[in-house]
Amino acid sequence: MQPKKTTLDKVDRQIIAELARDGRRSYREIARSLDISEGTVRTRVARLQDDGLVRVTLVGNPLAMGVGVGAMILLRVKPGFVRQTANALVTFSNVRFVSLSFGKGDVVIQTLHKDVADLHHFVSETIPEAAPEVVSTETLQLAEILKSSWTWGDWFEYLHSDAQEDDDPPPNEAN
Image (cartoon, rainbow, N blue to C red):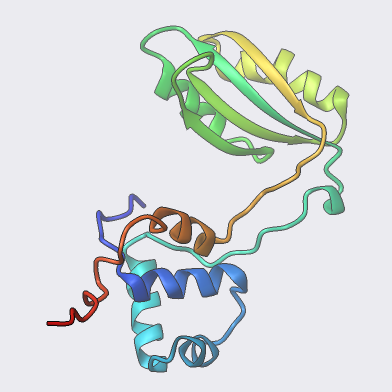
C-alpha cells in the first residue's frame, strides 16, 4: 500500500515515537504519558495505519537469531531495467531492504545469510538468475553493526531541532 501524503502534527509524531520505543504499550499508557485521551491515541493510530504511514511490528536482533553474515549489495543495471530488477529482488526472503539509488549502484539491497558461502552463492548464482540485467555488483559485507535505529522520535527530534513547531502557539510577546 502506498502511503497517503499527510502532514504529521506534533501529537502524531509523539504517538509514533512512543510506539517506536515499545509497540506493546497500551493506548492508555501512551495517552497518560502524552497527557491526551486514550480515544485520541486510538483514533490517530487507526488513521496512521489506514493511511499506510505506520505499521506496528517487531524488530529482531539478526545476530541473536542466527544470521551469520549481513551485506549491502550495490547493483549496476542495464538502462531501462532498474525497477524491474528491484522488483525481482524484493521477492527474496533474505533480502531485507531494496532501494533505487544514484551513484555506484542503481539498486541497493541489504541481505542476510547463514554464512559467507551462502552470500557468495546469492551474489554469483541467485542474482544473475533472478535479474539477468544486472551488469555488476559491489558487495559490502557488514562486519559489525554499531547502530540500527528505528526509533522515530529521534528522527522527529532531528527534523524539528532547528525549526519552531508549526503547531505550537507562538510565545507570548511582552508589550
